[in-house]
Length: 221
Image (cartoon, rainbow, N blue to C red; front, top):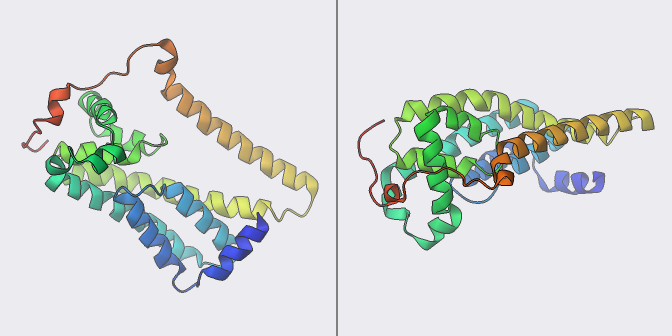
């Protein structure tokens, strides 16, 4: 792992590194399958190695996620009805998943924006449905901005902590840090399994009527 970090360090210019992070997060926000965690966590590892500056990288991570999400929201809000039947769009966001998320919006409202940041694989679909529902921009932007104030620094710190753990001064310290990391991963998996426990019961995942995919609401919500 340390060798991989060192190789990556040599490829990243500290001056342009934050802009690279920002650009990758913009791409991840417009549907390209680049999870924000797999961008921000390695960036945090590079910060720990002094290959990237802390505050510019943190700012790039925060604003990259926000601008990427808002860009995709705007695209889906303006031309989502013309994209929904495109083959590439269906591969990106499956209609079945869209109906499931639409149901959650009908039940929980804007809270779905918050929950999607905590559930792996939900971000793009949730943003897509929010845009196609013509949700008011501020109702989408406010929870996004507030949630990213927590998630972006946490992901950056997670990368910093992982890289720092690899340089532990003693075996005991390394074991303690790795144990903590394992506990965090187990907790995340447990939350995800709790969320998806309905599958184990054999019950169908609730979803909105399929007619919503043909007739999109034009009225602001």
